[in-house]
Image 1 (cartoon, rainbow, N blue to C red):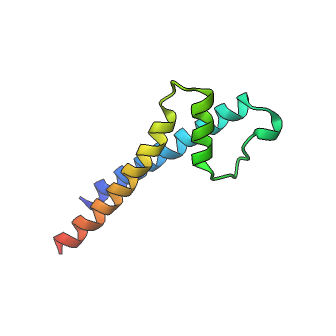
Image 2: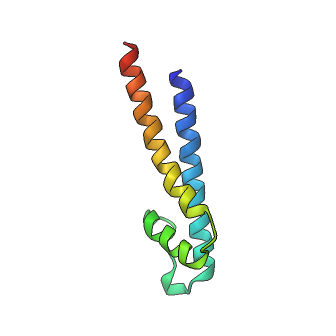
Image 3: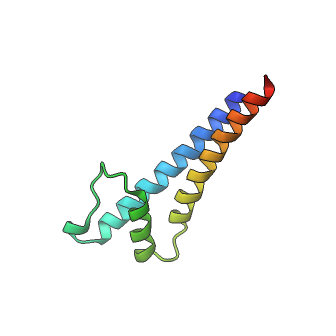
Amino acid sequence: MFMYGIIAFLIFGVVTNTASTVMKMQVNDRVSEDERFSWWSRNYAEVGRKHRELFPDSPLPDIARYSGWVCLLLLAAGVLVSLLEK
């Protein structure tokens, strides 16, 4: 059971990071040179805000935000289940 939780946690983590990276690439292609985000920047909220301005119909900002919360909920559920099994 614990292994399934870890696998789900990793899958949602990969989805979150992939969505954030794709958003950053799309935003950097559209904005001027001085407004671009650096590749080592971890300001995902700002990237999501800028992406929503440039691409208002895109679901990527919502996917990135909600999959991050799902990751945290899965982690908390895994900890709770492991505590209750003892």
